[in-house]
Image (cartoon, rainbow, N blue to C red; front, side):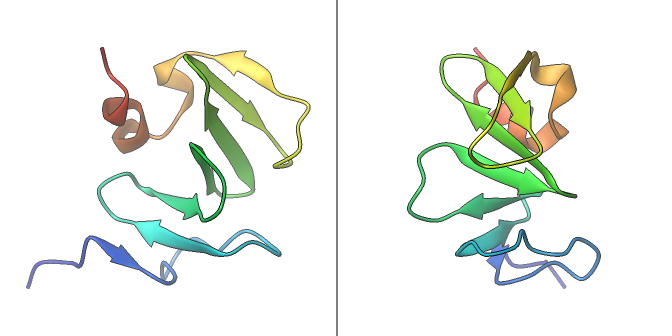
Amino acid sequence: PQQPTTMKAHPRYAPPPGGNCHWDNSLGVYVLENARDLYCRERTYYRWDGGWYWSNSPQGPWQETDSSGVPPGLGRRYAR
């Protein structure tokens, strides 16, 4: 059977603490609700702001990276 596109939680990856979110199978990350272009997987946050950034906290500090530094499904979402 085909997996649903989104679900409340993933069986392997715990959701981020304190945030309303859902797991997106096509992206391979949690999508944080009420936050624009903010994602999380394995205690790492990813943010799209015309380029990729990552952090250990949703408030930053943010480190610049490229699409190779984010989960593959997420990198494909904003591929140019």
